[in-house]
Image (cartoon, rainbow, N blue to C red; front, top):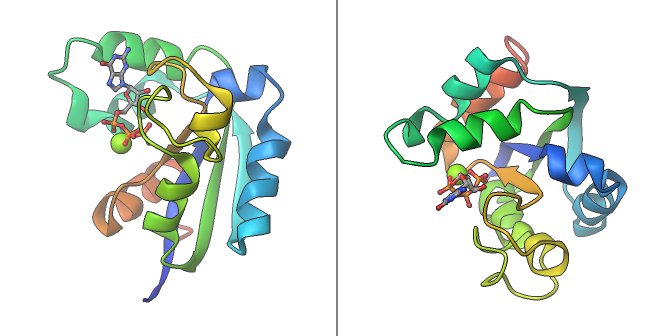
Length: 137
Ligand SMILES: Nc1nc2c(ncn2[C@@H]2O[C@H](COP(=O)(O)OP(=O)(O)OP(=O)(O)O)[C@@H](O)[C@H]2O)c(=O)[nH]1
Ligand SMILES: [Mg+2]
């Protein structure tokens, strides 16, 4: 398994609920490396680019409204198998189906407010890191 980089977000719900430390602690405890971390409110344009694959879904407007509504924490996380590894730490998209012990399984009930985002493959990781940390990774 290769060393990978992935974009992780603590979404506005996670920041509001004071879960940044909890998420970072789990990433560090697992053995992944934090390469960059920034608290920011996302511009609408960047949010639409980030979620471009969902542009035709009925919940797209809601998704963009939510992700731009308040500050989020963006991170570049690296490590052996970090892309799939972080998806496992996060748990299933629907928190009611996420395994207890995962971030979503432990802290969320609603699909629209599921605390974290993690890139789902090498191409999306590259693309998304370019949106949040242009020219850096
Ligand atoms: N309101 C609403 N939000 C949804 C629904 N499906 C997905 N989402 C949101 O859209 C985000 C992106 O969806 P996906 O990319 O399919 O799910 P994911 O890869 O597990 O989640 P991300 O890591 O956030 O990309 C999810 O994390 C949810 O917050 C839905 O049916 N309704
Ligand atoms: Mg996704």
